[in-house]
Length: 98
Image 1: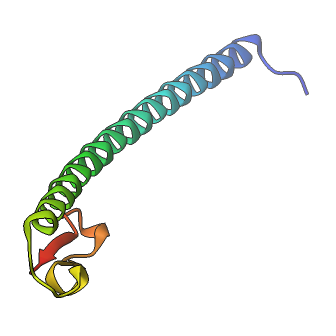
Image 2 (image 1 turned 180 degrees about the vertical axis):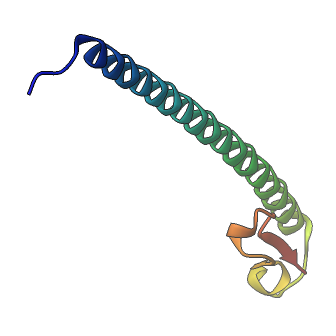
């Protein structure tokens, strides 16, 4: 069975257009995916930086309180760190309980 050269040419053009469109959509998806992943990493780094800053503040405050405090109770009874929220909630999970 022989095909008309015009039919072969038309099918080839349609197939090429389809492959080109598919490549374009795939490239757009990969670009969007990598950009959103990069943005999530930046947000996570900022959250961890904020959490670390709060931890350093609380630790230095607890140390200063321990240096000047004359209380005879153990430190764990005076200033105990307890979780306030789950770490997955994105809030600062450590608060001093005095």
